[in-house]
Length: 337
Image (cartoon, rainbow, N blue to C red; front, side, top):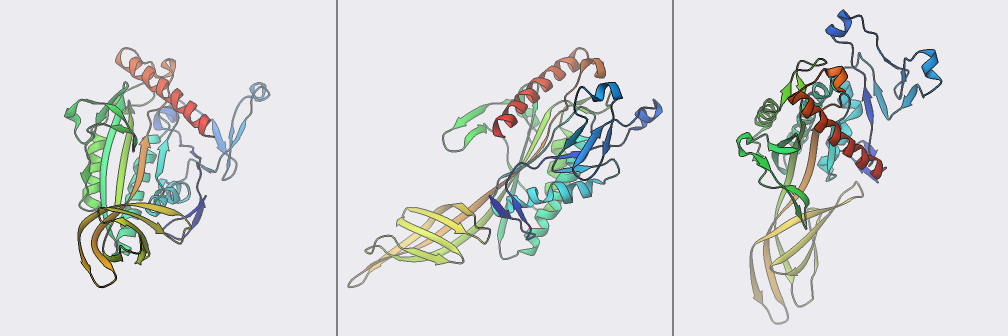
């Protein structure tokens, strides 16, 4: 389904897959390692295999977008993630996540993408002063199959619950309201500092858990509406908001925007008054409503082989949990295709 971002560009709602090839590290250069992948164009990469191996398996792969070793994170964000990040501001729940082998640069890339997304979100808020936004943040990590609150790290393991209305939720996960962009960056940095990391043969600061940062963006409205009870429920339009009034205690609302998408609001009756005349019974309602957007930033721990990481003990246990959870994720993605 086509959607519009606040920047005006029109994108198709789908899973958008990009690949970033990182440059060789200093350690790899000292060992005289060679680059294994080559970017042919903006959509295709080639695996540099020996001629005898090339006949047994495909050597080139095509994606929505490919970024080479010289590409900066800003370009990766602008061309590969910006539309997804801004689509959340139109009411489309969005997720950006990094998936790949350990030591492939996922955390570095996700930090840059998150920083740029926060800049653009607040730029949009500052450019639309007539709208009242509230941003809340929650963050968690999944370490050895245990869910841990990164805003409240001493709270212990959290439980997953099935809510009949909201689906699967994390019970007692802390949520904090950001005062401004600087406060939000501070909270994100605090969460990242709480994450489990460890040293392996491939990475001195290897992420040992999956990290999920969720931004909840609320667009707030308040209205005073008047309707005639005797004539049944009436449609009352106010500032592009179409309300369907059923009884004074129940309000349901829908927003129609230029993106041709219909977004639902949660509305609460603040107060109401009523009066009669000779033929009609009128009710005046003060209503507060909000629209909720969700933006998830997911930095997955990297898949790894014990033979490459030289993992043992606690590191080996972590690697087993990481690989098992990534295998489950692969099953989910294949099912969604």
